Image 1 (cartoon, rainbow, N blue to C red):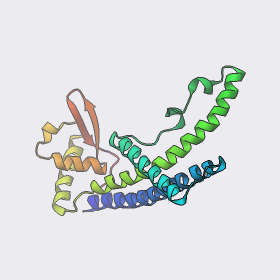
Image 2 (image 1 turned 120 degrees about the vertical axis):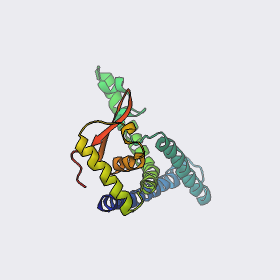
Image 3 (image 1 turned 135 degrees about the horizontal axis):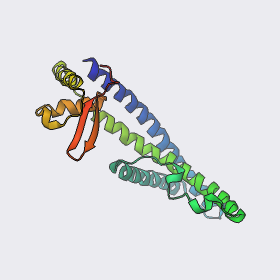
Image 4 (image 1 turned 90 degrees about the vertical axis):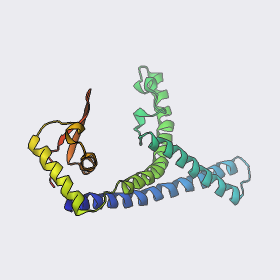
Amino acid sequence: MAMIRRYNRYQIVMGILAILGGLLCCFLAYLFFRYVPAWSLTEFGFEVTEGRAVMVGWVGVIVLFSSGYSVWLKGGGLTSFGESALYFESLAQGDTGGGYAVGRELGKVTGTSHALSQLFLAGPLMLFNAATRFANLIPVSAELEGRMSTVLEGLRSANKWQGLEEHEGWEKEIRYLAQVGAVDFGVTRGGPRFKANPNYTS
């Protein structure tokens, strides 16, 4: 059962690391929303009670989880600054001296905002990623691994792209082989095609 155990072990380790990283990012996000708005309002002469500051901190975390869940549900993730809505290409190009100066100053503000948003959003995304990894663990079974090995050997012998119709009744084993990286997938007009990954060692 080396194939399954190796895959599960990797998923568990990465899942635990994702949980630790996610909790750290969520904690940093809470501290930001707990203290920065309260400090800003205090600087403008508004008094903020500790209870309200704590509430703002938790509301900020809840909003982040809501946004993170929406991104995760769509299969998305963190984005680079150039891909974000905070990046203004026309100003960043700096065709003129004034445009360059404005773009530079604007980039300082939007770049920092983007970095903070990605840092805070990373927390929920890492936690959802950890849940996905644990949900995708393969049942440890000598019988299942034997069937997976049989299918994999057949695919290696064929050494060509094939479809599920050629392996009727083995769909579950092929899906598990795809999870562990033993097969490569491609999409054609006829539907999904797959073949043995020549770089995979079982």
